[in-house]
Length: 266
Image (cartoon, rainbow, N blue to C red):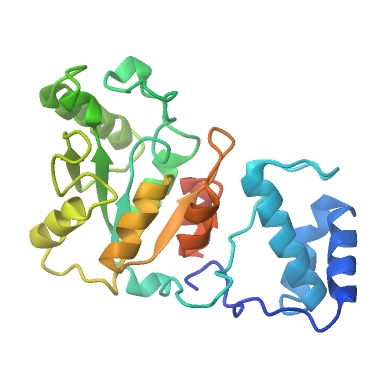
């Protein structure tokens, strides 16, 4: 897997003692967990510990371990069927917008004005890091509110211009925005359909399914990546609980764009 981990897919332990000891680690000093995993990443007890720790972070379940989203590590796909290429192989990073770049509004509410746009912590630095690593950063976003008449496509473009100015103040930029303004079942571009990804590939002839990564926070993002045949990272944060299907389909899981990019570039 990319920079996240080179550890192979987690195999079932030979006996239950690994599970018991892994759970015991969960109840030990949580500040030590990163060092323990670094020291013995293939130890069955540590693998079980890591798996349970991530599940707790994603489901936001408190079993006595004081977690914050940044305590979560990246989950390794359980079946080993797919993995993220090395950082050097990735040239294009497709980002969902709401829930990845900015805080997602409650269900039924749409962010379409700058004063409602709340960048997630560390996104400016994360995008700047991708820019400096010579990755092309493309935003692919569903904006159903246009079809519902709540705002116009011109307002979406204005918001994106304001986002670009904000990012420029931090030495960062988005290379292109791809927007679906349609309602459900009206097009082939609304994720989980792959029209936006196809358009991005048409505009970027160097893009391929082996050098592109999608980062999103919803099941539809991950489904689009899977259908299109590219790896994906699911952003799981405290603002929204992720479905089991999204976690299962994603190539990897991270608590934030900032954390994913830090690990991605390491």
